[in-house]
Image 1 (cartoon, rainbow, N blue to C red):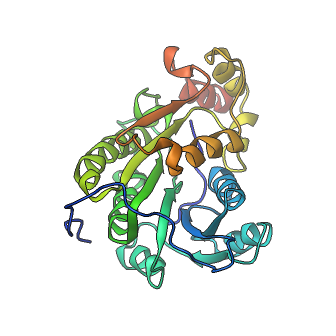
Image 2 (cartoon, rainbow, N blue to C red):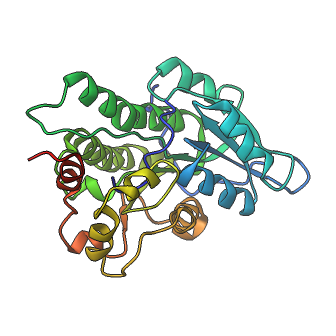
Length: 288
């Protein structure tokens, strides 16, 4: 349950990797000085993804907001400053859909993947179809996005994935989500290793509890929010805007020497134990 689990939205990376890795990342998109860089935000229709779209638009990017829910993406775009932004539909688990998202985007400077989903169930009981579905969105989808980003980003461009506190901290009943996010964290490092010579930086942000429209219902389960907060030294959940600020920095030239980093952003929760989410659910349901 850590991080934003909103919006299941569901290449060749060889190229020429010689020469100077700094490169020119200006790439005029609009021609009028507004939106002179382009960012693609996958899972941008709600939650952390929407906050990232707002933040990057404020940073001067022309933002492509992509989500499996096109209406949600369009709603986010309608609230962005400027007329250089657009909404696109994407299914992050579908290779052709992810490839189509990037078609026609001849200049891309930043790609953010915040698509994610979760499921709850003990290993002994969880249907394999549910396990695969979570891994497909969170890990395979992450791979497809990074793959297309590698093919379209300019030299000096950046990819930022949203992993989770659960990439490093296990949660009972969350085997699929934890395994997939841990895989995405390692995928981030491998991609950084491979794409560094091309001047493309690959990083991730691992949020702790962030209350979004999708995680909000879990907060209604008795004891869940209190347990999270009690195990967060700073004593509160994070906000989508705080995560978006970290993503913004990782996309910026201020982080030009950072790659392969999985940034913990959880109020210190990684120093504590993970909340007993499954226990709270079972108690609510009257299970033993």
